[in-house]
Length: 137
Ligand SMILES: [Fe+2]
Image 1 (cartoon, rainbow, N blue to C red):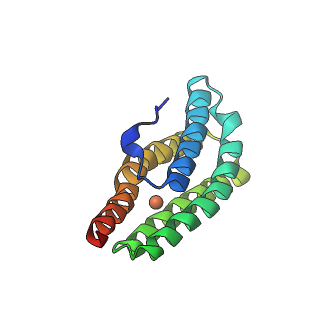
Image 2 (cartoon, rainbow, N blue to C red):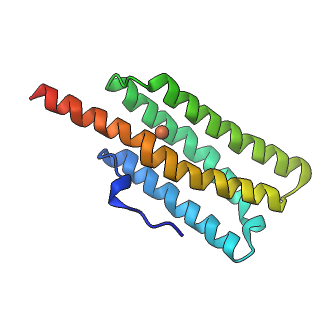
């Protein structure tokens, strides 16, 4: 279980709200894994991620375009890689059924996403907005 920290916030309500929603889902999955029910939960989690990423990454990328975010291309690439991982896992689950390995892989991917992407890369968007705000004054 990972608790939401104020430091995860980038200061844009819509995006922060989506991030909190994602964390709630991740925790459901982590808890299921702890209770040896990860296998039952993986398909539902992957389905959620497919829909969620479509909307959330779209919103985030629009925002980055609006503010002329300098690392937009790299950031977009990271989003595409995440989507790819989710789709590959879904394919593998469809083809071979749910395995402990796929559960572990999703668990790792999600933890890494929270700690490295939301907490580091997405934070830069907030910083960029704050800097632009300062310049405008
Ligand atoms: Fe992002």
